[in-house]
Image (cartoon, rainbow, N blue to C red; front, side, top):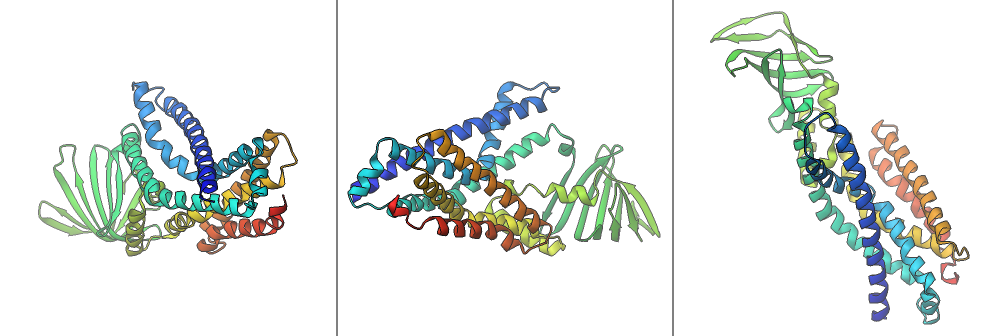
Length: 357
């Protein structure tokens, strides 16, 4: 039995590494073409574009791991079918269900590695990628971050630099804010203190500001200042959660709660990561059941096509529930776990009599 386990494990791992290498190559090429298009009017080396593509590819690979496991499982069974090894194992007393349990266990092992090591590494690379890329975009001049001290914004407009700190937000308003305005030489022009600032658009309305100019303060009913930021742009700057490690996501959630920001997207991302090993197991088993039920088809292309067809269905099912979750039509936990539940029920219906195949 140990010999069978070692033999089958080697085939599955080799199938997985083969599919992973092919997928990584395709993702890298797609990323490279995207970077070349982005830098077409900027004088940068092709090697820099390749470097950026390498940095961005792991985060994209993470998103499609379930489909990598599905195709790997299909390739694993194709290898067994082509050499009639599946029949040899059957006559030796090794049931198909035991083979499925074995590759599911391997998928669980890989899944744990993926969410503990690969995800954190890919998020760090993604973050570094965004930092490098920001030097060639408008966002390189601006900055918005959230920490335990509130929301911080660095803005540059009309040869002036603004440093803004708000203790929290409330809809389109910054609450308990302090603004320092500098000239191009970083000399302080004035400080502004306000309990409420409307950032609905790029012309901020500062209500009842207390203005400090060279130690002289005065109060006004309201003033207007221009900014490159509005509330939509501030929210969008924190939408790239794939660049944050698991611990960073947890910290960001705490800071969002302090600022009265919605933590919905963060909660969905955390649930998605937590569910990943189970997702990979289900995709592996699902692909195996499909292959065992399609043994009568001699064409390997047809077998792979059946798997890809279900890939598309599962992809759109996930997207549907993701949209329902982000729009708060359903609970965010249900938005992540319902597709997995549907897949589990489908596997349960298909797994009967699998040992007779």
